[in-house]
Image 1 (spheres, rainbow, N blue to C red):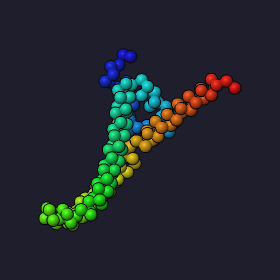
Image 2 (spheres, rainbow, N blue to C red):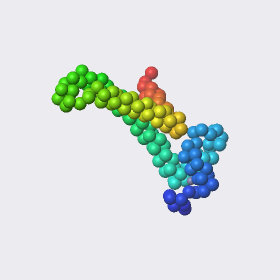
Image 3 (cartoon, helix red, strand yellow):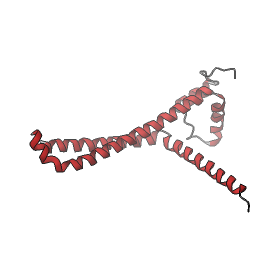
Image 4 (tube, rainbow, N blue to C red):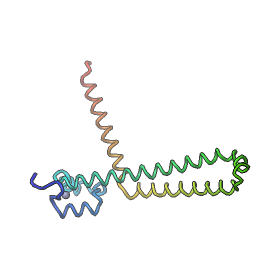
Length: 154
Ligand SMILES: [Zn+2]
């Protein structure tokens, strides 16, 4: 290919794709064909698309991990409650207030990360991208099963 990898082969198409964050899952199949052929010939846009999709997936993973973390923190706090009087005697702290502060922080964190996760899943093609990967895997497995069945003598 004559064009270097860091240059777009079609600036106009490249700019359109950039404005969509290289996500063509939302457009009609006949329109998609042109962009798919651009991805096929343009290494730069292909790399960008890959980068943006992995960004979406990492955001989805990050927000769901945060939600799990806060859920875990709340579970831990629930188990700490019986030790309240011990800590009160040793540390002389107002554990009751602290406990409730931590619980509200945990609940707030959980709500915040769930909202962030919902936003990521709504505004990025991460779900359809992951769904696409799953569908592709299912298709490959089906093909393999069909191949094995064909080999088996009747
Ligand atoms: Zn391009």
